[in-house]
Length: 183
Image 1 (cartoon, rainbow, N blue to C red):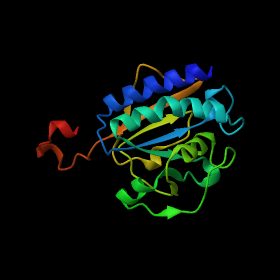
Image 2 (cartoon, rainbow, N blue to C red; image 1 turned 120 degrees about the vertical axis):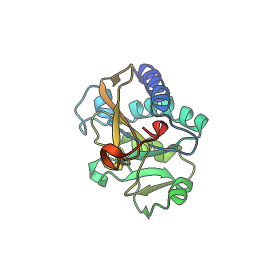
Image 3 (cartoon, rainbow, N blue to C red; image 1 turned 90 degrees about the vertical axis):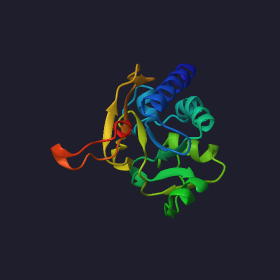
């Protein structure tokens, strides 16, 4: 099952990068319930092994494309985000003092913390796109306006996934003209 989670996560992240038109330097937020991936209810059966499998399918692809990653913690850490210090500095995000654990922050956030060179936590971001694995509610961390994306897969492991990209707001009403590549 763990190898299957890794392969599925890899497929999803590759499709998401393309569908969301992510480019080098863009920020992607991921929320992940390891419990849901293994068939349990969110927050009930945290699995570091499942989180590590998904992360190992996702993170190398993001690094290859130069896409910055923010990993959402669970509700016990108020959905704080784990990212590289350099990313926090680049976007001007204020660092807070907390370190995730499997049952306080989540296994996926713990895995990210352990994998990042200089991990930090922040409370708020505005990502260009997002991946929600298992109903973790990442919407609060996306830029306006979020646009749902459908990929060829709808699950990783046994967890449902939801993906979104963002676009600039359309303003000006019926007489306005819009730039097609920003849609």
